[in-house]
Image 1 (cartoon, rainbow, N blue to C red):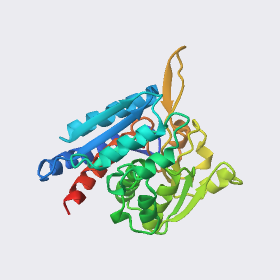
Image 2 (cartoon, rainbow, N blue to C red):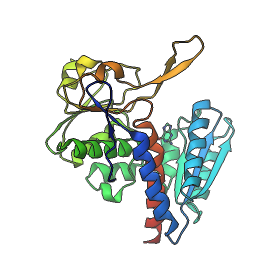
Image 3 (tube, rainbow, N blue to C red):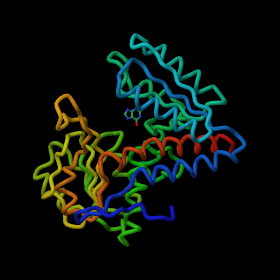
Image 4 (cartoon, rainbow, N blue to C red):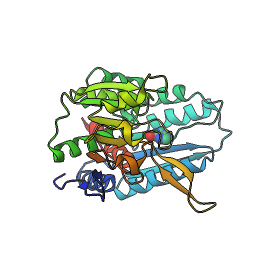
Length: 301
Ligand code: GUN
């Protein structure tokens, strides 16, 4: 990426433009896919009718088409059994036209998600949730792993912003609020791999605002609307807000999206911050396409 993704705001912090960064990733993936000898294939599996999942899955299919991929979607009823779902995953594992398999979470009650995710062939696990990929990342072998899309996208924004601001990630104090397998833990591994000093804070952390205030790089991934206030932020810090929370809007009956960080307060203190919407959100799908491209290329090796 040659152009900076940092945009001025009316207050102190620069805004990190995830839409621009995502568009750049998608453009590069489409360009590289066009000259690959195999068409990357992505299969997305949706079980049940969760409206938010339906929206996400639709955007994943759209992005796959925009990159010139072979894209298939399986819509299964909420009554699908665990063994039926595992059967479909096994079929996709064996399908040479499919390089990436994504089973949308959450799965209906009664289906053991970890059993399903562990059935996905690690080399087709474009979500990066399989224990083999988790283990490769944890042992410092990220170059051989498929890395979970949201933290991979957040890391790309951190690297771009740090470069534009002339900051080092190496030796920086990084605090991640949230310890999920999907974001918090892999985010910690990615920052550690870049030699940051990493703290994972969570709901039981004592004096959480004090811990957060130590951070040169603060990553919020808790799923609680605007929990992180302006006075939790070290002046000049790089703030990455992974939260996407729907809350009641100003007008009755309307809703709006907010992050885990109180943006209006944080923007007066931080050095640079990802807004919600338009920050980390758009990166997830872009990194899914990058992972699918990578899985297709590795299938040729
Ligand atoms: N549900 C919400 N985010 C994700 C994701 O990144 N991957 C999958 N498979 N399901 C999700």
